[in-house]
Image 1 (cartoon, one colour):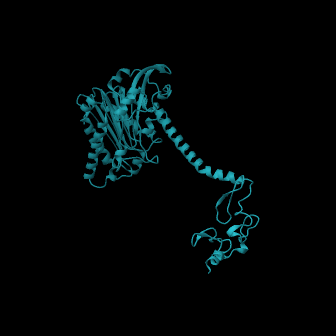
Image 2 (image 1 turned 45 degrees about the horizontal axis):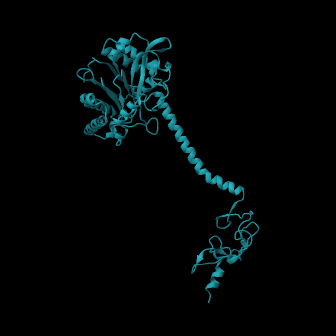
Length: 436
């Protein structure tokens, strides 16, 4: 695929990680970049093969080439209709075709495990798409006077993120070869004034993304070097040299891939100094939505077209913190609800308002004067009058006669309906009632 640099300056590199060099494993990342014939539309795709899959580098290479080729045919429709639910339909079809090609390559789909992150962007906007980990980010570049030394450019204004998806554990993710891959396919709308798009595998992500947002000490100088480069080969060499530097080893030993696309208009701003992202003031709190920094009518448009809304890094942190707090609150409420009955019973016991029947374990209320019911403590009356109890209400063990004893024993018949529905106190009474 060819790249026409009329509208975009594009650079890419995929380098083998330190851990793979030590083990003799190949680089399992892959990337593909292409533009439309007139250079106005850009498609870029990055894939990260799973280290546990025997042929994942083949799956990654096949996936990026086929998906990039399939999306490049959709530029006219995207220009005419804009992003919509049809985008996911087309991505779904392209990935089904990839899976079929992998099956034809022989072996199990699990041998080709790989993730996917990509973009299709032009003059009227576009979208990011994603399955699994890795990262996609995009932004608008603006001149500002908010810098610590006066005027400068904000590289990451109106930042849009396509976040990685991980499983239950941080080292788990999802792959296009999974049975439920379609559940993890998501996309995010990009506005028409997007100036920077960056795609990366999870090995590059800790270098580019900090806790608050883009890691300016790493990515800002790299953008400046790319803008100052003399051509495509020079730009690619800069990115490859940066990713392969031993200085990255303490941060990550994984394979590292980065695709960086810059609007050509940024060449006119390269003499300005960049303002580090962490030195910029935090965005004002949202009034309309926690998920988008666009106006309400733009939020409705994003919702109606079936694609996701952009989210700022601060909002991602707030959302994750809020979700954690909600889980803790739900757990606390559940524990409180479970402990409440026990607390009530404990209180009632301490106030001596209830007591446990000594032989059958039945809970009886005490009388208003604090005494136990007549048939629970002391000497019983009625049919069970022969069952003597001590002052604590315990049955006199000397009078127990097995299962049919006066007090019924461990499994006696006292108080149970027998014969013709009569309730008797012990076996002797039963024999007396049955005798002629």
